[in-house]
View (spheres, rainbow, N blue to C red):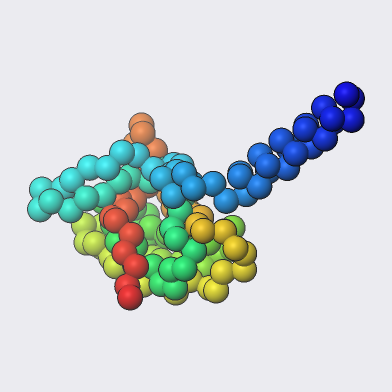
Length: 144
């Protein structure tokens, strides 16, 4: 009986690890991003904190991520946004004009795993205000 319980525990543990390796619900998981809003022309966006993350399908080869830094820097320096995929740095984007949307196209490196989704991290060089607002992110686009 003890061997059977031990075997069931191992099978349960292995099954849980397999499920959590690539869960189907991870596509909707975000961190460090506020709820969706709309600006007056109708553009959907969400604010970042200093570090935000979201997931994209793993077969995506290029990502266009609209962003804008609404608040000008007091020292005149641009707001720098560092993008990474699965913890690996991709590029830095300097947002020079605070009121203007920027549409950087970022090629994503070939995937190195069999997971269905990849994590995109957005790190902002500065935040402002009581709510630690970073930049506005529009909806991610995946050009064909």
